[in-house]
Length: 365
Image 1: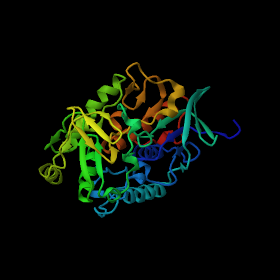
Image 2: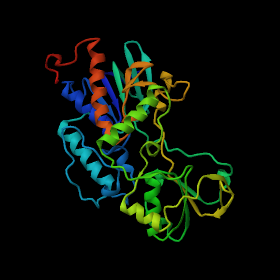
Image 3: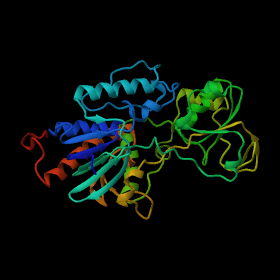
Image 4: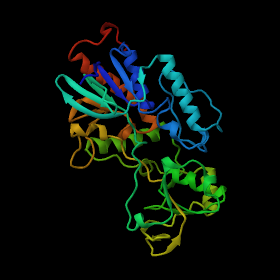
C-alpha cells in the first residue's frame, strides 16, 4: 500500500487502557512516532468518556482510577464527567508527549510477513511487530431482540444516545437493563417529570458490600476465568451487583427502582411483560450495555467456539503478537491501568525476540 508505514508497536485506542499502555512503552524507552503510535477514532482526547451524557456528573460516574504517573486530583464533583476526563486525558497526552494520531479508526488488523498490519478507514496502514488493541466497548451498543420491537411506534434509544432527562418530561419511559446506568436514568427521569417503568431480566441485586480493591480483585478473577476459557466476558453488574447507596435506597422506597421483571414482547404502543401484564409506553431506553469492539480484529479469526477470545492475561492465545486491554477483566477502570502496563511489558518482550528495543540497556524495572 502506498501510504504504509513501519513501526514497532501500534496501540489502537486512547482511552484509559490505551494511554496506560503508551505510558509504559515510553518508560521502556520506545521513541514516540518512531517506535510506536497510538491510533484513536475520536476527534479529541477523552476516549469513550467524551461521549457521556452531560447530566452524568463526576460524582455520579463510576470511580475513575488515575492514569499512571499523573494523579487526577479532586475535580468539582458536579462537573460533567465528560469534561473532567477529556481535560485530564488531554493533559496526560501533552505532558508525556503521547503520540496519538486522530481521527484514525482502525478498520482491520491482518497478519503479514514479519508482523501485523493495522489499517485505518482512510487507507493509511502501519506494519508492526506487536499490536495492543484498547478499543473498549462504547462503539458496540447491545440492542436485545424481542418479538415486535421493530413495529413499536414509540421512540427507542440506547445509553449512548441519551443526553438529558428533561427531553422526556411528561412522557412514559421504559428503561430496560439492570446496571447502574439504568438505575441512574430512572432516578433522573423521575426527577425530570417522566413517568417511568423498569424492566430487568433478573431481579436487581443490590449489595451493601464495599466496592474496595479486594472486591475489585474478586470481580477481575471471575471475569478472567471466562476469558481464559474462551467465553465472552459477562456483564459488569452480574459480577458486582448494584451498590445500595442512600440515593438508590431512596429510589427503592419511592417505588422508582422497582423492576417489573423481564419483557416478553412489544406491541405497537407498548410492551407485554413476562407475567402477561401490559403497559403503554412512549419511549424505550435500552440501558443494556455494550459488547467488546473487536470488529477490526475479524481477519485474525480469534473467536473460540464459546464465542469469546481466549486469553492468558492480556495476551491473545491465537495470536501472541496481539494484546487486548479494556477487554474482559481489564474492561473496568480499576483493571485498565494495570492491563496497560502488562500489555506494554509483553509487547516489549515480543520486540526483544526480534531485535532489542530502543534503549534496551536502560529498561525500567
